[in-house]
Length: 79
Image (cartoon, rainbow, N blue to C red; front, top):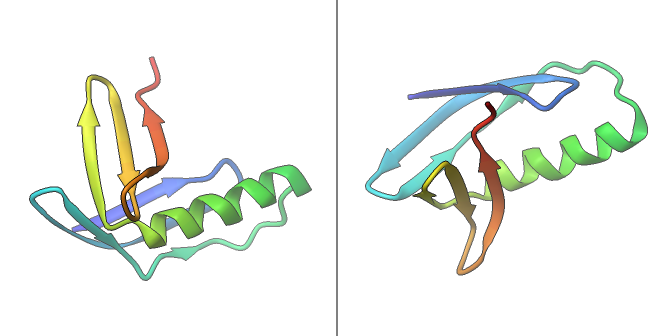
């Protein structure tokens, strides 16, 4: 499949493969807009976390992304 999103500054997209709870994303491409420093730092961390994700768990209205044993990203559905 294809994943697409926005970090708050740049848009990104790329392929993903999901089998059961396994989730592999990438390579991810993104636009290259200049971002304020704090948002740019967040974007770097988030894109790195997405690229390292290996499996996921959904609990209630939250999506947890895992690289190893501990979740490194928790996403919550906005209202």
